Length: 378
Image 1 (cartoon, helix red, strand yellow):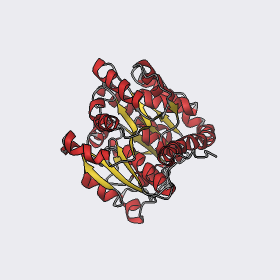
Image 2 (tube, rainbow, N blue to C red):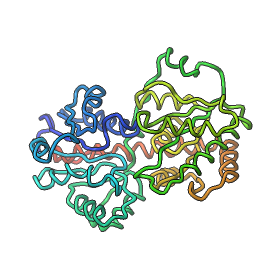
Image 3 (cartoon, rainbow, N blue to C red):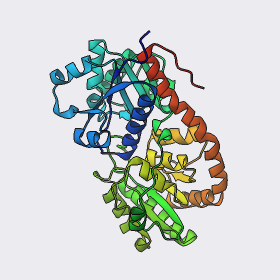
Image 4 (spheres, rainbow, N blue to C red):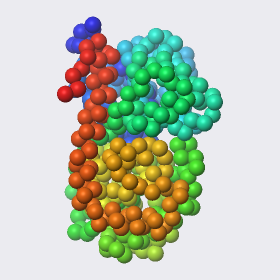
C-alpha cells in the first residue's frame, strides 16, 4: 500500500484542448476531484496544449498530436496511472487516435483507468479489435451509461465494466459578470428557451443535417408563438461548427429576430450558470442537457446518439427518436413537456443527486488505484 501523502503522477488523455465545452467540463471535474483527494502531479495529453495550460495552470499540458510514439513513451513511463476519458472517445473515426497512449501505457506496464467513457458507433473490425484489446487490458473500466457497456460487450470486452455517470454532473456553476449578462441580453425580463445544435460527424455519422435543421427551426418558431419566448442558441463547440449550424437553423425560422447565438467565449461553469437562467431547453448536445439537468431546468432532448438516449434512460425521461420524428411529433412533445415542466423539474431534482453520487465513484476508484486503499463511497 502506497503512502497517500506522496505525490502521485497521473496522466489524463482525451478530447481536451478547448474544442468542446462538454469535454472541458469533464477535465475540470477530474482535475478538481483528484486535487481534493491526493497530492498529485497531473499531465494532460491535449490536442491544444496552450489552451489546456491556460485553463489549468497547475497541470502540465503535452501537445500529444505533435509528438511521435517515441517522444510520448518517456512521459507515459513516468506515470503512476493513466486515465483515458471521460467522454465519448471510442468510436470508429477516433478510437485509434485516442487509444495510442493507452497502448503505450499497457505495453510499459503502467496502470490504465478507463474513466466514465462513452462508446460507439463501432462498426469497423479494426476499431472493434483495438477497443476490445485496450479495454480488456485496463486495470479498471467505468462507463457513463448502460448503453456504452453494451457496446463494449458487443465488441467482445470480457472484463468487468462498471456503470457510473458523466463527471460533468459534478461541475460547479460560475456566475457570468454583469457586463456579460448585459451583452448577451440576459438582464431583460423575458422568457427564454435555450437551444443546442451539433454538426454531423464521426460521433453522429447517420445524422441528416437538413432534417434536423428543419426540425429545430419549426420547433423554435413554435416556442416563439406559443410562449412568446426569446431563443438563445448555445454553442458547445464554438471554434468548430456549432455557431454555423445555429445560424443555419435561425435562417430557416419565420421569427429569426427572436433568436440569437451567444457571442462570448465562456468557461463550462459559466455556460452551466447561464443555462440555469433559462426557462426551458431543447437540445442535441449531451453536456448542454447535463448542464440543464444540473441546474434543474426542464428540457427536451433530440437523441441523435446512444449517449443522449442513455442520459434519458438514466433520468427516466422520454424523447422521440431524432432520425424518425416528424415536425408535428416534435412540437407535440415540446408542447406536452412545457405543460408538465414542473413535473419534469421534480423528476430532475430526484434523479440528479443519484447521478452525482455515481459520478463521484470515478474519482474514488482512481484514488484507490493510486493508493491501494479502497475509498468509501458514502
